[in-house]
Image 1 (cartoon, helix red, strand yellow):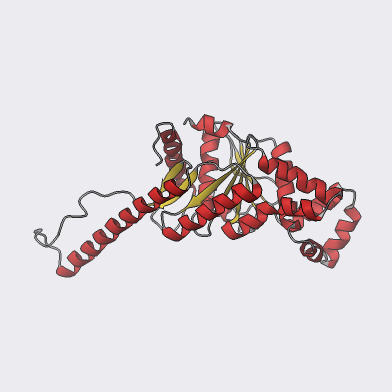
Image 2 (cartoon, rainbow, N blue to C red):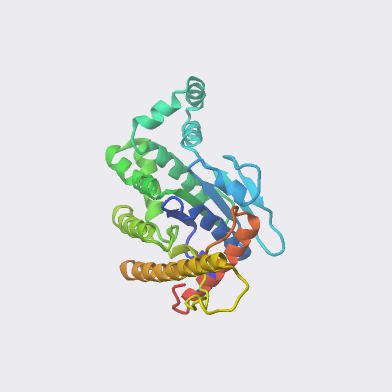
Length: 318
C-alpha cells in the first residue's frame, strides 16, 4: 500500500495500546511519516505525560499549538497539543456562554468536583476538543496518543455511556457528535500497538474486539513494535571454535545467542497467533537499542514504518 493511500483513508488516527509497548513512539513515527508525504500533522497528547516533547527534543507541549518540526522542502510541519480535562472543561464553558462561571470555578478549585461528578465527562470533554480540532485545525491529519489500554476503553466508551445518561441537552449533543466521529471510518481510525510477547498480544486482541463491539470504531493496521532483527548463525556451537576469548566470554556469547534464538521464536509465534486471532494487517517496527529515543530515532522508525506500509500491498504482514 502506498503511504499516500493509507493517509488518504482517514482524518484522525488514534494510537492506543498497553502501557510500555511504545505507542507514543509509534504515534510520533506515524506523524513523521505523514509529514514526509506532505501532510501537515497535529499530534495530540491526552494523558498529561508530555512524552512527545522529549521525542522531538522540544522543551514542552502546551494546550496551544507547539511546533515540533517546521515545514521544509522534504516535509510538512508537525505541531502538537496537550489536552487535559480541566482545560477542555474551561474552554467548553467559555464556548457555551459561561465564561464568568469558568473563571470562578478555576479560582475556587471546583472544576475537579464538577468533572468527577459525572462518570465519563472528563473523557467526553477531551474527545469533544479533539473533534473540534479535527473539524477546524488547519492541518491534514490529527494523530492522538491515547491513554494506555485500560483507560483507552473507558476513554472511547464515554460518549455512548453519556448519551444514555443524558437524554437531552448539551452533554447529550456533545456525546452524539463525538460518537458519530468515532463511528465514521472516513474520519477516524484506531491503530493498536503491541510488543511481540504473549501478554501484550492478549491484551491487544481483547481491546480490538471490545472497540469493535462497544464503540464501533474502524481498526487500522496493528503495529508490532520492538521486534528484534533476525541474525544468522546463532545455532552454531562455539565449543569447537578457535578463539582467543576466555571461557567466561564464550559462555556469555552462548547465552546471548540462546536468548536471541528464543526471542526470535517467541516473536514469530506471537505474530502468527495475532494474525490468526485478529485478521488485520501487521506493521512491524524494530527494537531500538539504547537508553533514549529522540528525533533521530523517530526519523529512523518513520522509514521503517514507510516500508511496512508499502509491504501491505504485497500481502506481507511485516
